[in-house]
Image (cartoon, rainbow, N blue to C red; front, side, top):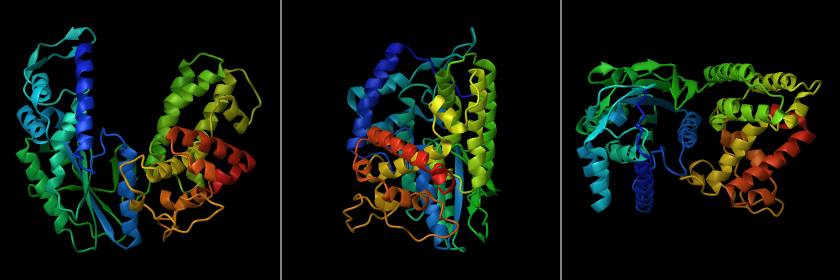
Length: 438
């Protein structure tokens, strides 16, 4: 279990004020590296995965292989030396009273563990940023920020707080750069009083005919795996999400059974809200990455919502309604429609600068104006059977066909609502359009 620091309300108010000033300072001076996706505006786990997979699919398209090393830093938040952190804050320009306050906030801390109404003895804390506090995530991100400077530009790296992966898209016989990067990261951790967990640091070899070179840490070969769990999403060395589909369907059914057994109401709105709150997030977290290609997998996902609405209908003592009617009753949309909604909204965010990416990192916009279409037409890229279902291939035709008045919206929430209404109408006129062809 992760320890969560319970601090006073006054402390949290002050932390929030300090945090706002730190974030403003970081943004104005562009201090945090682009490879860090944790706890920063316009960045997320989904966007990190989007960047990684886009690079990997591009490599596959060019007959390259990918070696990826997932590095686990042992007890990272709890291991940060406070003196080192204060020095790094001073280096990036956080000084004076703010720095003194942070130093006093971190130093001379005591803690005791509370379980139910029982307390442990009080202990002195000599290192770490207290997890559960408002400042802890940003302080850790600042501490680890210069790690990227130890990684050569030929190697790609991605961070989400302390979750680090490095990878290289390469020809078959060139693995030395990735090994060298791993050695440099190991040295950085040693210099900064952090420790890499050997048993939890894993290698994934991606690509056809990958020779699967061994990579070493302190002279010992790292474990190679065929399936990895990366920021909550499981995939294989062939970039298949089959294990993940099975896991989320199982978890969604388990959560649904728990709700059905414990929710005692005949109000359809409450049943619909329960599904949206507790079950649907399991079935659509980062769906832009793993949106199923096959009809079999799409139907397995949709079957969860069909089952839930059918049982909920019985609990509401309402009978004889088909799936479309049940969706309207519980104020839900098909999961297939929502995956399309997430796909197109992601493209919107990238084009309209709601992320820290530029559109050219993922696709090329057409430079040929068309009076009958919106001005954000995306060029169709080269693709193969392995890459044709990637978001920037599967969604292009539908994006390019969107009405001008929807695409020209700049506000994200307004765009989402307008697009949702448009897709619902589109699905109602051709029920199979989004579900079977997408």
